[in-house]
Length: 259
Image (tube, one colour):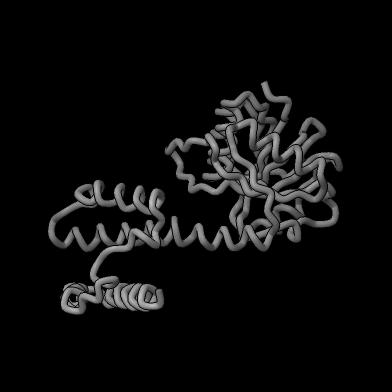
C-alpha cells in the first residue's frame, strides 16, 4: 500500500487514466476538482474521492496533479489554494516550472509520454514519465509516485521536454491523422481500415526493431514518378490530401537523396 495521498485538478483523459491507475495501485485519492461535475463526480466515485468545483485542497493532500488543457493551465495554477508543503505538479509536455505562481513553493512536472482515451486501458508498465522539480525532495516524491504505478522516470529539463513533445506530435498525432486519411481514401473503394491492420502492425514493428531510417519503402524513396503522378491523380477528389501527399513525397525524396 502506497503512502501517497493524491488529489487531481482536472477530470479529463489524462486525469482519469492517472487517477485510475493510482487508485488500483493502492494510492489514496483524496479530492477531484473540476469545473463540471459531469466528469468529476463519476471519477471521484470510482476512486472513492471527494469531488469539488473549488480549487481548494486541504491539509490531507501530499501531491496535487494538475491535468487540464494547456490553455487553462496558468489560470488553474494561479487559483490553487493548498498547504505550503504540498507538491503541485502539472502534466503538460510543453510547459515547465515557469508557469507556476510564486505562491506555490514545491512544484514539478509529471508528464506521462502516452496518449490516453476514455474507455481505453493503457499499460503503465515502464511507461516513460518525464519529470522536473523545483527541488530535490519534490523530485524524489514525483519519482517515487511514478515508480509506484510502474512508470520509468526520466528527469529532463523544460527545453528537452519541449522537443520530446514535438517529436510525440509527429509519431502519434500526425501518424494517427495519416491513418485517418488512409481510411478515408480506402473508403472510396469500399474498404475499411481493417484490411490494413497487418501492414500497420508490421510498419510500426519494423520501425521499432530496425529503425525508421532503415525501414522506409514506397514510391518516393524509389523515385517512382509514374506511380506518384498516378496517386496524385487519384487524389483529385481532395486538394488538401493532394498537397499533403506531394509535400511528404518531396520531403522523402530530398531526405534520402542527401544520404
